[in-house]
Image 1 (cartoon, rainbow, N blue to C red):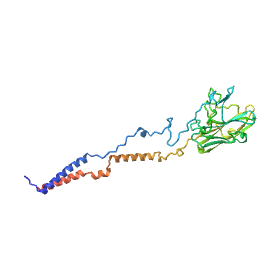
Image 2: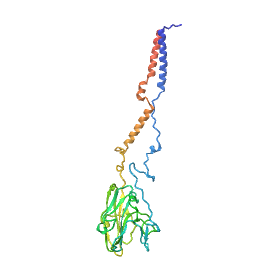
Image 3: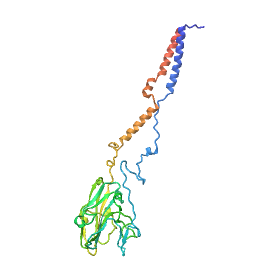
Length: 338
């Protein structure tokens, strides 16, 4: 029977422990694999990167407000307090206008209107809810200095907050059941009555002032001198310059009526006007911020799967092999001492 000294027994015992630890380390080194970063599952919204939509379902560009909503109001029907009169021959129809005045002293049958009509970027009638504290001014001078709403004629926005009747005239469009207009109010006017039948009405060029004046385009003017207003025109395409429109008219005693409409349109604000943030696109049109965000997400995923970091893996790699070698050497040296 082999006898071991106490020191030899200690060495052999320590060697056995190292050998077992080395074996376990080898198995761990062989069976381990580097962590694989898995990208988080993206939702449909993130994958499609769809544009925000407005209430109608239409895409709206980031940072740009949608056009002002149209203001839709049907004309007063017969029996309504704001229905005024209709020609017996069906040539015209009239609705009550709070800005309608007769000249005192009454000088003749000359009558007419000066109006303002505002449209949004989509060509729909609006009342200026998006351009508050803004106004359009039409000089009228001596020809209408007797009228309380003239000299000059001023229209303030939004119409809904400034006037008893935001819109009071149906100046454009057609309807087979109406002598004039399409059945929907589209203009804010001041009316003139009691002028000399051969008198002259003059007006100057309209000016736009106020907080959002730069958002309102003066499209032009539509002037008609005859007895009945022809509403079968397109205000945005048929409006003309001030010079071409005429700047006023002289009544014909047999056709003592005339009208003029100032046509305005809201410009769609640009992204920087609407407070849009700079997305930081590069020369190729790619969004740098999106790339940076993706890279940041990938890095965070890798770190979350590897709490100790890559450096910890490198410092422990091969530990099992080293322990196994030391264990073998200890066993061999112990055996020689037997």
